[in-house]
Length: 378
Image (cartoon, rainbow, N blue to C red):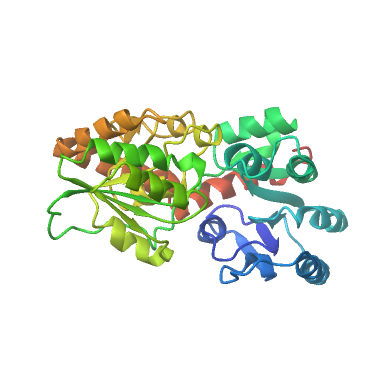
């Protein structure tokens, strides 16, 4: 069973977010002693649809800080105190509180809020005051933490080079997928048409415009596309589909995560990301792991991050990013080669079980934390 360690989650992390659930459940399955002190706030309620006033957010933040202090002094001991995603607001206070205890502060940054909003989504001008504030938020949170969790080595290198953080503070923890929700089933009958599926947020790194253009190239190949999701670029993507007059794409709004496996189960191929942003080269998205977990053939962008763990034509098809022609050829390759589809679906699922399942992620993270537990200088 190995050495037990005490891990405490404290703060305003999102309870239902897969990143948090997978790590927490993984650590529990790895025989870590995990204690949760979660604080619900107006900004982490998924059901909250209206725009929040600044006063409401500030008041809620103050309330959450008082609750964090109260919960902290109810905790007796711990080896690690973890700030789960999204925890940027929680790190400074937890750092101060942690001075009263000998444990180490772990920040699950997951990604850079500066990189995501300023560079990838371009929602904020790069030289604006807001952008500088986001940059400072990333940097100070990483400086205060003893350990930082990120999803790929490419992401770690970005943090090291951009925010000047020591590399030995980082632990790579893959995103993975919840294998109680995403798991393979035997298909009873085949689709009449070859079906390709995409699910996710409509943001730049996904490369949805290239998927639409690839679908147009494949209109005469008896292939249908289902695109599930919503977000920043939804209107632009739908307009592009209409402009190209595509007749083989069906758009579906976001569905609850528990309903996704039923939709993926009906597909022949699942798509990852294909965007031309720098962030797209640094991440392996949730959907890729969910597709592997479903034992569904995966096509995703050929990026440095993907090549950290995925081999082309063994675990998936790695396709040139931002290239609709290359994507169309990759889809046709799998459509016309059922043996290759079977091979990569089997190998991809085996890799998922070995490295990206809840058990694997919890096992690997606990092993690393145990090794670090007695080191004073991280």
